[in-house]
Amino acid sequence: MAITTKMQVSSTPCHVPLIDLASEFKNSEAKITRAILNVLRNTDFILGAEVDLFEEEFAGFCGAAYGVAVDSGLSALELILRAHDIGPGDEVIIPANTFIASALAISSVGATPKFVDVDPRTYTMDPTALEAAITRRTVAAMPVHLYGHPADMDRILDIARRHGLLVIEDACQAHGARYCDRRIGSLGNAAAFSFYPAKNLGAYGDGGIVVTSDVRVAQYVRKARNYGQSEKYHHEIRGYNRRLDTMQAAILRVKLVELEARNAARRTHACTYLSLLENSCVVLPQQAAHSEPVWHLFVIRSQGRDSLRDYLAERGVATGIHYPIPIHLQEAYRDLGYSNGDFPVTETCAKQILSLPLYPELSAGKIEYIARLIRDFQNGHSSGH
Image (tube, rainbow, N blue to C red; front, side, top):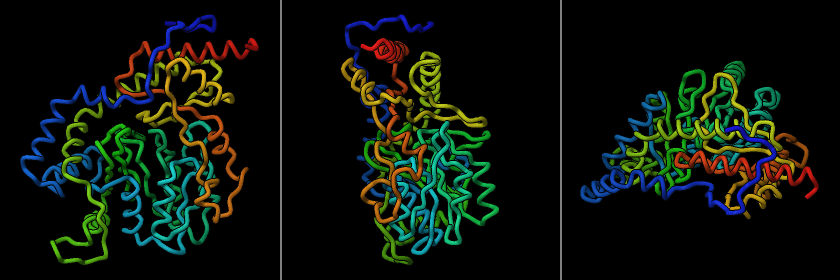
C-alpha cells in the first residue's frame, strides 16, 4: 500500500508495545512448559544436560567449535578478556555508541576502554577511527554488532592482523546475523552473546554465552565460570560463579529452533518500515553490503526526536532510546577525560535516535499505523501546527 503525506491517522489509538514477550510465550507455551517440567523432574538445575546440549547447538549455529554458557553477556565479554590475559595497562578499543556493558567488561579486568566513533550509516565501529586510535598499549578491538547489524569485519580484521590485535566480537544483539555469508560469532578470536529476555534469542532471565574456535579460550571460560574447577573441589584457577542455569538452557534450546524464522519475520517488518518511511522526515537505518542484519532494533533518527516520541506515545505507540547518554559522557567514565564533541556521530545519535516497535508478532497493520503517525507528525510540524 502506498503511503502519501496526505494520509490522516484514525483518531482511535492503537496500542503497540515496543516488544511483546507475552505473545512470544503464548506461541511457544506448550514446548516451553514441557522443557521446564523436564528440568524440574530431572532436578539437574546447575550445569545439567540441557546446558551441554545448548552449548553444542548454539556453537554449531554460529559456525564456531565451542560454546560455553554463562550468566550474562557482560560475563561472557569479561571472561573472554580474562582468557586472553588482558588486564591493567592494556587498552581495548570499542565504539562509543554501545551499551555500557561493553565498557564495563573491559574495566572489570583492569584494562582501559578506549572509545572511537561510529559509521553514521550503520552505527557500528568506524574502522578508520579504530586504526587511528591504536597505541602501543592496544591489545584488542571489540566491534559491537549494534542493533543486530554486523560491523565492518573485513576491514576490522585486516587492521587487527596488521597491528597484532585480538578481535573480540560483542554480538550481544546479533544472534543469527551474517557477514559475507558467515555467522556473526565465527569471525573474531571469540564472541559474546547475551540472552537477556528482549534479545532475538532471549531467556526468561539473564544469560549469555562465549563462542570460539580456540580450545584454550573455551577451556579457560569453562573453568572460570564454575569456581575455577574442571572437577568438583579441584580448583585450578581463581574462578567465579558465572554459570547459566539448566532451566534457562532448556528454554533457549526450544527458542533456538525457532530463531531463523523469527529473524526472517524481523527482516520482513524492517523492510516494511523502510518502504513506508522512505522520503519521510526521519533518517532510516541502512544495511551495509555483504551484511544480513537481524534487526534486534529498528532505530530511526529525528531532529525532533523527543516531540515525535511524545506524539507516538499519546497515540499508543511505545518507543525506546538506545542510548540517551554515550558511555564517554557517563559519570562512571568521567575519569577517562572525554568531553562533549569528542565523538560527533555518537553524540548526534544520542540526541536523535528512536527505536520503533519491532518483534516477530508485530502485524503489518500496526507498522502501517506507526508509519502513518510519523507522516502525520511530519505534516503537522511542516505546516506549523
